[in-house]
Amino acid sequence: MPVAVCYELRYHPFFLKLKELVSDPSLGRLLSVDWEVEVGLNRMMHSYVRGTWAREAESGPITLTKLCHDVDLLLWMIPGEPLSWRSEGERRIFRAENAPEGAAERCLDCPLERDCRYSAVDLYLRKHDWISNFMTFPGESTDEMLHRILKESDYGRCVFHSDNDVNDTQTIEICYPGGLRATIRMKCDRRGGRRTARFVFENGEVCADAYDITVRTASGECREYDFSDLRDKPLHAGADKAMTEDFISSVSEGLPLRCGIADALRSHVICICDSGA
Image (tube, rainbow, N blue to C red):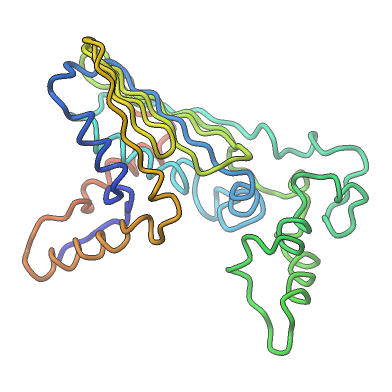
């Protein structure tokens, strides 16, 4: 029975093109990779400070709950097996000592709430963002439900007084034979959802920035690829559908999966371990 892992970014048109470009043999030997992930502030607060993945013992390290996709993409794009890896991170922002003077335990009770960029009242009650996983009781209006959530649940707590313990910055370095190092850096950013990458080769480089890819060669050639039309397309720009079709083809026709259990084990080992030998 085939086992598929939902690494949907392997099926995304942008990353499929990026893999094609970095696999071009004319660029020569790959020398280094720098990969940066910006986790949006609202996503970080909702998921990793107040939410489901806020405490490592209950969910896992942020390397696994967030960065596993990025580790998988690099392992998919870089040929060969890693020799070693190391991972370092810390919680820099969401700590009790960073709370402004006078901050309350809950945003509903806080005199500083109106001017706080981390306000749960602003995120959920005013903007109605990130509320799709909240449940309304029978006879309860949306605003009544949100007031209850803010008053009773972890989603209403001050980010500086939550008991989260996962990192908000992280660096993973993966080393390959021949001296190649691939570095993934994660940070919390107000823009959010943005990935940048730079693959440096003997004969050029491939740079990805959000939905743009640029290829520059040693001869002076420059090619640009614009995928901005995919920005608002649903289901990861069709990647989710392609992933499902891949699994159905594997079950019905015995075709190999683009991402099977063996692929996922490679990335999961790196994400779970603090360092590897």
